[in-house]
Length: 321
Ligand code: MTE
Image 1 (tube, protein in one colour):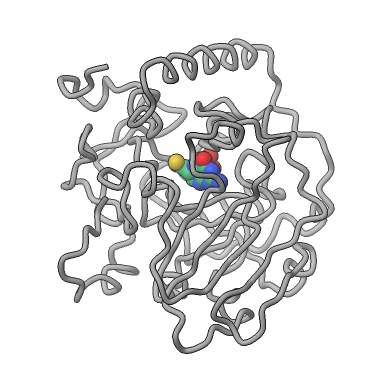
Image 2 (cartoon, helix red, strand yellow; image 1 turned 30 degrees about the horizontal axis):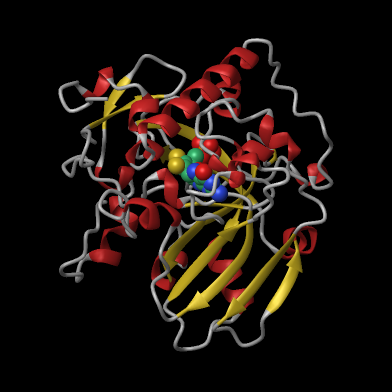
């Protein structure tokens, strides 16, 4: 696999998908065969995600016009529902059917670590407490594809308030479920399951940091990371961890899933920047999913005004990888 001589628009997403970094050729080929099989199955797949979600009555929620995207079209819903990264269900994009195996009720979220009082909260209780709204966000994968998605959910800052972190807490560490019996990707022992991500408290309490519980006016479909996922649109998509079961407040910077696998390519900060290429491909432009359009990538994915101040005094940090 030599992607260095190709131009970005010639890249196949499977070439740049992070797992290609570390899998040996044999494992990689196995992955490709599995991807091919899933793709074949996908030809007969209808995007019917029928199971009723108990939170369905809450949606659609009020749109917040302060968060919108006006320079590119909303991504086609069917496209967004069937093109996902969720390695727990496979290291390819066609995981939407496999993800339906994930039981999402009962579902609890542990809030622990450096907080006044650790608690475990049921998702439906959490939904009752939180101010739900819809926000239209850009979503930019490190693999150089992008979407515009109408998330429903609540500001992460509200959850931080509920958690009451103690004064020494500097970071949030997020953890996805671990259940290899339904998520067959988690049987692959070379991945450091469960999926982990992290933010600083300042990032988590920024206005843009959002906990998504719905999408396209409906409860979050499982392939998007139901029932609760992060949406931090100024960062590469791998920071937006899905199907969260634990949020821990810590004084130490968490090591994320991809950082643990390949820290030289996927760092803690992962802020979008067109001028800082991934070690193996350019980040200068992006493909708009569901179209043939390419657009120039924008610093902080277009959210510079809202977030650049978070980083202005940081020296010696790799803010853009
Ligand atoms: N969260 C978990 N638990 N597992 C994953 O594999 N993939 C990440 C992120 N969150 C991932 C995850 C990556 S690489 C991206 S680009 C986005 O989810 C994809 O989100 P989407 O499928 O809703 O577009």
